[in-house]
Amino acid sequence: MRLAATPYTRPAPTIGALKSHVAGRTDHLPIDVPAESFVIPADVVSGLGEGNSENGHKILDHLFNLPGGAAPAAIHRKDGGAVPIMAAGGEYVVPPEVIAKLGGGDLKRGHKILEHFVLHTRKQTIKTLKKLPTPHK
Image (cartoon, rainbow, N blue to C red; front, side, top):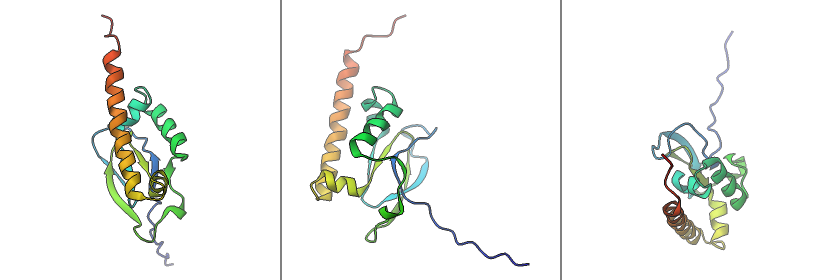
């Protein structure tokens, strides 16, 4: 009896929240993302969630209208396909379709908007943290 070989198909590219036990600045998660995606760093996600990455993921899911997890097959792009990257737990992958929409149809402009969003969120988080009282002894 001979067994037929099962062809290997790569999983759909990952978008949305990267939930993992891997630390937030380590880049130890090998995943595929759609070409031209934008990865929001874990510290920004956590800052949005007031120190809670789960809450930050929820805020970004709502903001970008994404369910998170693996993208549907429709997200595979003829002009770029999936790109292998090393990511970290707590990060958030924004797909190119959402980026282009943010940029009014311009992918490059959408990337600039997200870069500004990351910098602004970091500044706001630092400002908030400086105002917090010190821990009690």
